[in-house]
Image (tube, rainbow, N blue to C red; front, side, top):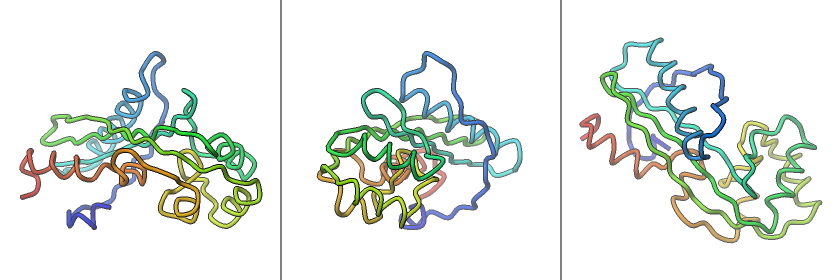
Length: 174
């Protein structure tokens, strides 16, 4: 997504714990994880600017994380089928050691999907690294999503427009 915005970057994996303290709102939880990732990378590199993000899917006030197997993925998608849910991405930019943190929320309405459609998607696309067990840019997004309210790219994992504006504001990009 950053490439599409013509932003130059290096990828540095942040091997961090993605847990968060109890009592945080969903937005605060996503922001907490993103900041934790950014700080982890900050301590590993000398880059003056670090961007980290974490995306969570919330349906019926329950976080749907990354499924560990096909059964769990189908279960999550069954919960999403025919329902509206939230995709919340927490973003943290560390610039010269100073944190700039925000979250963005997008509402997604799924069509009612058949069990065979759900099994086809999970078996073919193996969405085990995806919050909520789906990627909007794949088959399920094309045939299974009725509407999106908010930033489409947020559902892909990064609210690029807001990130771009923040990076401009911080004079990280022109």
